[in-house]
Image (cartoon, rainbow, N blue to C red; front, side, top):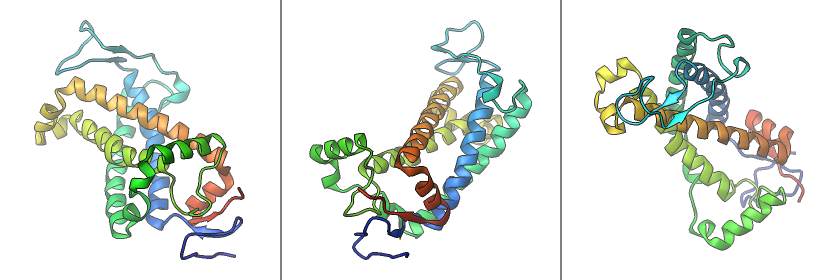
Amino acid sequence: MVTEPVDDIAAPGTLIRRHGLVTRIWHWVNAVAIFVLLGSGLGISNAHPRLYWGRYGANFDHAWLQLPRFPAWITIPASYNLAISRRWHLFFALVLGFGLLAYMIGSLLNRHFRRDLTLRRTELTRRHLWADFRAHLNFRFHDPERPRDYNIFQKLSYIVVLFVMLPLVILTGIALSPGMDAAWPWVLDVLGGRQSARSVHFMMATLIGLFTIVHLVLVILAGAGNEVRSMITGRWRVPAE
């Protein structure tokens, strides 16, 4: 039986509505975009696996980081082809950017940000953070009294991804596009030059990749079937303690 508890208290086994339509659509579109962007980005990196700071950087300049050559099974396409990697990357960069914009607008209109991502003062206390951390160590990821709510670590991670990592990876991607440079030359100035933009772009992409891995691990630990169903239908079954 599906119920919509007014006070968010629901017995274990009860199906409750947890994810709205806008969130679910964006989640799956974003999942595909991130997968292709990371794979094609690694293919692009193989063309020159060195990172620099400032405006310029080439073979004989000092690189702050020497990247490995990524294996074919993890790049898009599997065989080295810089032109095709760039095409995949550019197309799904547009998907990522406009998808994020649509999600932001939709989440403001349906109050998803206010309802699910607002940080309460009590959640940021040392006592609450420690209690939530210990609960995670015991594989308990929701509050039995408010099962619909995101826990504090979900809120903090989603806020950082949505309002720091994704905007930065998009902004630095714009700075790396010659066409965008011609239209908005100030972007490179703000970021400290093309090579700085490339370094920040790679760092943000790496953090997004790590977040994705941790996210998938936690989905499995929390119950993959229940979590995936909730992101398809919006309905989440309250687990037993």
